[in-house]
Length: 330
Image (cartoon, rainbow, N blue to C red; front, top):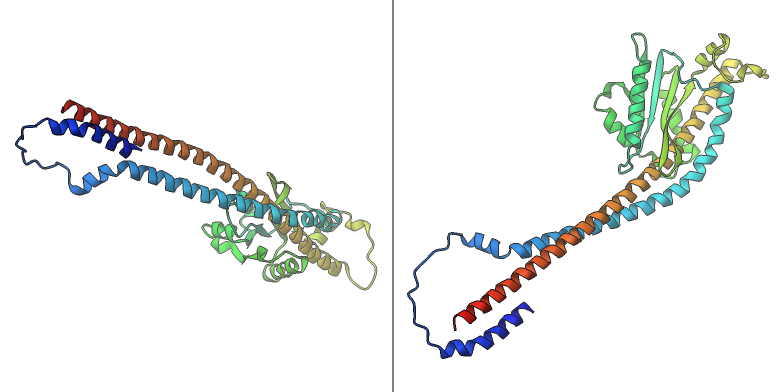
């Protein structure tokens, strides 16, 4: 449109200029103070700026599509795991009533089992369990005490390796790669029991409450020796002493079986609860990212429109100035 106006003005003024003789003037040989590259940069500055904004808008739109898709995937996985996590709570609650759960018990050998995710983009659930694990390490460490770590998940492993590398006895990753089931978690629990010596196992995980809320939780599983010792001295245990033992098994053998089964049940519930918390946190994070991308897209659209309008205004001013110069040259 701008070039059409310029051609129309030129055709209108050209006959009058041709009818009027103009005396030739000597042209002095001058050189532009700018180099050719600088001149090309100044001439294409407006088009480059709009192109940069347009590319930025395109990249933000692509990011917004990705975050929305990740939110939908997390919502689908959350619905699949949430029901199983709620049903698994009934596995470990009878053991808590029978054997008790005393997180403040003072023992010599403590093992902190930290559950985290293998992937990021899920808020602060991984940093939260790491902070709780480090706090438990400080509370249970001492001159005659030993505290070790068992890490489940890539993110907690990467964080704990920085300052607690020597205290990590076992690390497991890609646990959530396949759909979780009790057999898979019981194998993991059996590996932990075979590779560590403990008086108390403290499982740190995120308990799922809602999509936007999760609670860092510590569940304690005592060794059979500590359970029997606490029972003899009248420690804080459950209703174990109210039951009579029948059959050929001794009390120590029964406690051994109960402790192993309790740990596998607690681990199964903790893994599912942590998976629900991860999906809920990822949903919230991706929703916030999508909203932020939308706001950024609005700002970039406004900037693009202003830049484009300024470019059009500048071109119109140049056309009008050229027409005025031709009018003055009559």
